[in-house]
Structures are given as structure tokens and as C-alpha cells.
Length: 262
Ligand code: SF4
Image 1 (spheres, rainbow, N blue to C red):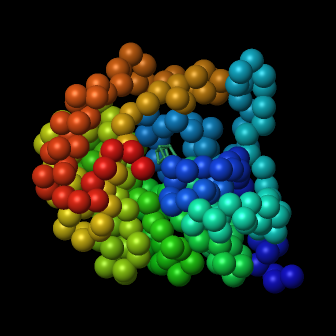
Image 2 (cartoon, rainbow, N blue to C red):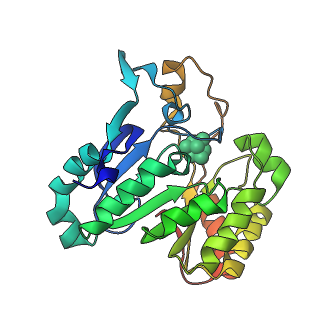
């Protein structure tokens, strides 16, 4: 066995049969740890790198476990026939997998070596030298651009967007298969002006896909389970009319390849 198969990383879930995180049927590996603290985050248990306890559905559970690449691959290969038939593969998610480069790159490499396609869902928030190491083993990059205004980005995500925007330009220039995704969040980025700015940025990157992901509250209950407060409590989800208006705004700027969901 290759030495890199013993590389250890920290994950909190492996989700099978996903159809929303890249093409085809995919296995999603959720890594622990994220530098952002987005107020709408539906995986708050992903944010801390440390292993935590949380209450969910009335039961206490441990969130996070240390695994080797070989152990994760053992799970991944079970669904090989689904990947082959659907054009699917694996997607690294989180949390933010860029924060565990040794493990994540080894995992991507192990998948590629047996012909499994690879994707990452990412904030792009890491030095570009780190991002580059992943690109070598990635078929798809699904990257969030949450806001063009830095002050608002800091207010809602707890980090500047400057590194994100710079890395998006560099990833696009590298020729990677990059999709820009926009979580559309009421009170944060749900005006036509804000969506137009992001669509314009994405257009100038020269990417083929721009996905608007409407706000949902599926993670809200998890906050209480972690003894934390859900800061967007009381904020309504977007009406169909509103999200369609934003889509039309984005489509006028970006053109084909713009869609709701994805
Ligand atoms: S970047 Fe993703 S995982 Fe990290 S806090 Fe934001 S929504 Fe949550």
C-alpha cells in the first residue's frame, strides 16, 4: 500500500448517493474545520476542528473522527458502480477541506488513481500555493462567492473576501472546471444590485456555470444542540418571485449556465 494511504484527517460525516454536489451520484466526505462562521451555516458542527459533542434529535452524539485515507477509500469504492453509471464520484466538503491539505490531497489522489472523478466544495480561503496542490487531482471546483463587498462579507462570514476573490481569479485562469455558487441569503446578499455584482464578477472570470442557492433553514436546530444561537432566527426564506427576479438579474449579466440550485 502506498504510504499516503495512511495519511490521517478529521471528518464528521460521509454521505452517500448525493446528487447535488457535482455531476452524477456522489459520495460526499465532510471534513472538520472552517475559518468562516457564516451566520446561515447549515453545518455548524463542521466549523470547529476539535471533536465535539452535540445533541441532535434528543440524543447526544460525538461529532468528528480521525480516519486514514485508506479507511475512507474503503467506503468510497463500495459505490463504484453508481459512479460509473452516472458520471459521479466523490466531493470533498465541510467545513473547509483546504484546511487539511495533506489528508485531502492524498484522498483526491487515491480516488483519481482508481479512476474516480473528484470535486471540492470550497470557500477558496487558503494560500493559493495550497489550492494549487488540490487542482492537480480535481475534476470539478465548486466555489462560493458570497459577497463582493468586503465589509458585508466580514460582518456575515467573519472573514475578508479578498483572498477568496483573488483565488477565484487564479483558479479560473488555471483552466480548472470552476463553478461559482452563491448562497442567496436574505438581509445579506438578496438585492438585485448585490447579485448583479457577483454575476458580473463570475462573468469576467470566464466560468461556464453560476448557481444561485436559495437560503434554507435546515441546519437551524443544530445550533441549540451545540449550545449556540442561530443568528438568522426569524428571517424568512426567499419567495419564488424574489429568487426568480434575482435569477433574471444574474442571467441578464451571466447568460447561459446560470441556474437556481445545483
Ligand atoms: S464556509 Fe460553509 S462550512 Fe464554513 S461557516 Fe460558511 S457555510 Fe459553514
